[in-house]
Image: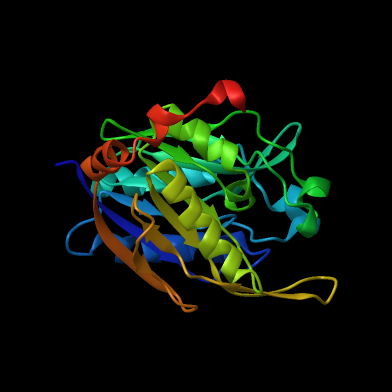
Length: 268
């Protein structure tokens, strides 16, 4: 049995205050590491270092993700836990990208992924650069994929990851009200159509933008199995959610309903 214990941390993010957010992440990670059973993987939400302070993102971004890498690497090595470190605003010479950094049990950087699809409803394309490759990851020898928030509206991306062997999909997000129905439906659809586990981590709390606009984030982080059944789901408060998943179940579901064998890609 390929059992993994997963912990998902949904918490409030203080937009525009990286020092506060880094301190909060370190506190929450230690809380998650103390769970029984001990997590094999911990997942954080999207843009947790800065929130959506996009007007200031150039000055707030973590240069090349160095602070993120230093903090998360030290934690992973200390506890022997994989961390899919949500995503952060990561600055480079050409601009800022919304980037996931993932770390192995030894603290080494195991993969990174910059968000491919920028969400124009929140003006991401005006302040951030698109990524240029899919997010692939190995967890204890098991193939996984990474997507960020708006990416889940593009089913061809998760299907490509599944066809490349991914058995689980990590989705950090800052998904706001009023689109809870979209969040739940899209995540379950990605799990069902690809017969994979989906581990989605959404933030909670409220942002008050410089334009006077208030945005509320509803949490409802979820771990979903390959049948589309929700194993655990958060509410709208800060929480650490945990579940044990058996990756052998992915093979069982794919044998039972052989979607991948029955595909006819020459016709679409």
